[in-house]
Image (cartoon, rainbow, N blue to C red; front, side, top):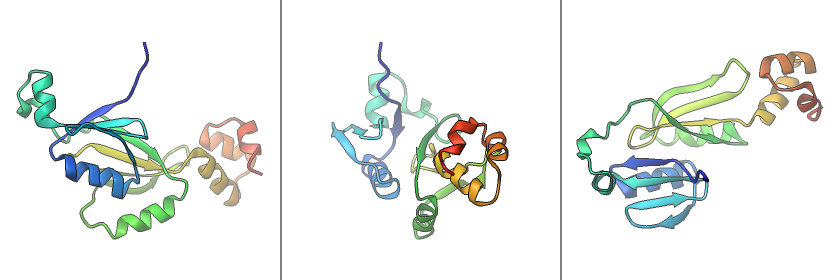
Length: 154
């Protein structure tokens, strides 16, 4: 068996596609009308069609359940944050915060209230922590990454 991708249900295909393409720079790989697969390895599916496929009432598909998220990494997190400042339609779960392991992340909602996390890659977090003066040992302890991984960024 092979896992293919997560699929999230959306109310408005055009609005959701626009969000993932314009805000998160994703590219559609396949567009089947009611279902779009993105090159990043996830798909969106139109709620009215999806509820018919699984034979449930579309009102039984709950929004803003806060029980899962799509996770993205951005090499230039500061530029992405600047881009978000010009998008007043974006609703945030929380602003920029630093996780206990040193990685900076921001979480927002897509148009259908699915949580989207955008974080800096751990490589970027390690480089930032080293540049802030942490030693290899301190950075390894903070990030939970092996010292061998940390040393490659010296």
